[in-house]
Amino acid sequence: MEYNYLLETVTSDKWKRIGITKRSGVCIPLFYIHSSSSIGIGEFYDIIKFARWCKSVGFSIIQLLPLNELGFDFAPYNSISTFALEPSYISLNKLKGVKNKNFNEELNQLKEKYSHQRKYINYQIKTDKLKFLKIVYTQNDFSKSIKFKKFKRENDFWLKKYAAFKFLKQKFKNEEWSNWDDKFLDCNDETIDDLENKNQEIFDFHYWVQWQLYEQLKEVKNYCNREKIFLMGDIPLLVSRDSADVWSYQNYFKLYKSAGAPPDMYFSGGQRWGMPPYNWGNIANDNWVYLKNKLKYAENFFDMYRIDHFVGLFRIWSIPINTPEDLAGSKGNFDPEQDYLWETHGRKIISEMVTATDMLPCAEDLGTVPDCSFQILREFGIPGMDVLRWNKIFNEGIYFKSPYHYRRNSISVISTHDSSFSPVWWKYEAGTVDEFVVKKILQKLNLSEPLIIEYLNLLFDIKNSENGRLRWNPEIDRPFKILQILKNTGDAVNELIGLYVSSFDEKKKFINFLGLKSEELNEELIKSTLVKINETSSIFSIQLLPEYLYLEKDFLNKNVHPEYRINTPGIINKFNWSLVCDYSIEQIKKLQINNNIISILKDTGRI
Image 1 (cartoon, helix red, strand yellow):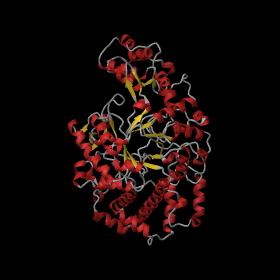
Image 2 (cartoon, one colour):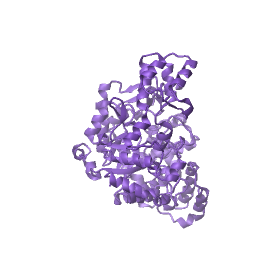
Image 3 (cartoon, one colour):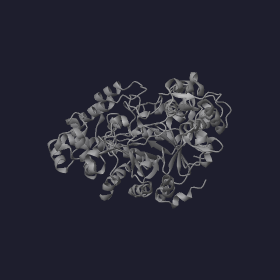
Image 4 (cartoon, one colour):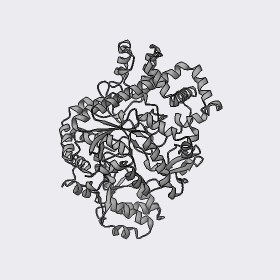
């Protein structure tokens, strides 16, 4: 497969460092993994243990979900800072300049409290770790630490504002910054200096915690680089409205708008995410310093980075902030509004991002993608993302795309953190359609509720449908039979036929795609799926860790249910962003499936 053209793109210097060879990797939310030494949640030094396992089986990329400090909902893509790291991930027994023996009692108590294996993270661990860190900090003098002083000096551009934000959040009992006293609504140097002078110890504690996190994660990167393992970070495009970034740089955001997504088949009212869109004009007028600094700080920890919602760099759906909540994203518009501006707009931002650091950017280019995106990705040598279950072609029907026809400048994936894992997709979703979407389509035909129910019973196998997914009636084996039942035509019916064509016989088509004969969910199906995704012409194949763990029969038997996922978009509950792996890293190293993984990667030319 020819990849040399990447050396002639804008990112050629990054590719020379990474190497233009097919690689395989694994993606993890850090909270998902754990080891015998971690307390309550995955920790930075667990990445070193995980990297050793990765090297032993042939993975050369570890992709991490965002590691920035979490907000109230513990969502990695809604962090309170795009600089500060999450304190939960700190390894308490590896603190710089600290003698552990002085704090053995407190450390052992914390280990005991979180010693029991859980299915989901108890985020109380953050509070408990910060309490421990406070004890350590107050009983030690770090004022003479040269490294600590250097860290504060070099990161003053974000650190002081972040510490002020943390202090004021506590002062105002976690209220959103827009509800603080008037004198603190604007982040200005005079106010911050006054706050720091009066609360030096509190500010220094926040500095110290971030320094410890910085030192640990940087050490992890250095270790991985020595072992020829590349770390890929994740840079969310948008920033939480209630964040240190937005409070500090209000002129860089359109606070009178909310980012979201336009109405589509799945969200008839569109989506409203709450984060403010960027005011790119103001960022550009300041020579892109905010954007460059954000990426340069991330470069301390990563060799590559994923740009979340990459298509938003060209245009983003913006909704006036005073729009009633029940209208969701229906009353928005793209910014910029004129599509002929999108390519120029995105090209400028991407150019600044590419030249800011030595990291290789990668793009999450899912959703409704403007045509200019594909052109720019190829021109810049930036890998996009191709998802197996959605990567289909139309050829007298809809079929799964041949692995040899995947984009060379792409990362091929089986699933994403916002989707189900492949065995769950196979058991509950493949060959089905979303019940909510179908009902919305039928409502467009101005049908009565009883008639909608009647049509649902004629079109679908209701008895074998569950979890909001509808299975087609086997007798509906041709699109024209939908027309016969509905006795109607028009756009709505065409939508339904489109759903039918893309989903009916999906399991049969997938089995043929894999070259199997049985639709049984077993280790053979899992292995064949992993082989196929690694056979793709994509330069990188990076899978979520569970996709490989499903090769283990016990793991497969226990974890094939709709709730077993990292995140369900659009809802807030205790299960999102909190899933914990059944196995510790030490146990993963001993699994029988490791030889299978090595075999898959060797046979597909990934090692």
